[in-house]
Image 1: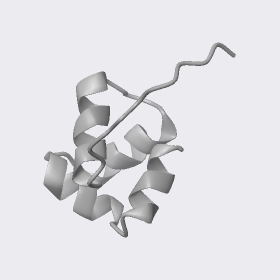
Image 2: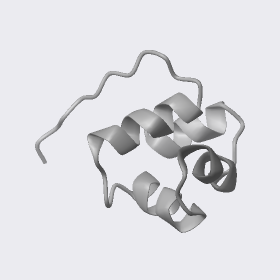
Image 3: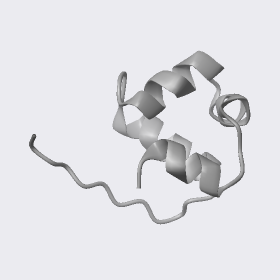
Image 4: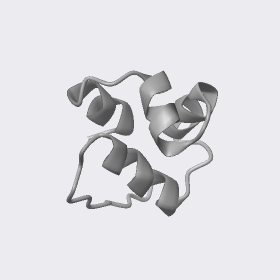
Length: 61
């Protein structure tokens, strides 16, 4: 599942996620697009959506 899908599933806006994790809405847009990703940011984002068990899958393109 992509991050924007996770956010929509938990019925939150980008602005709401931004306020929870302490970044701007535009930063959330960058996070969702796959730019500017750090693992700690992904975990905070997932926690803001109520995701307690996060598993990451890396793919080589």
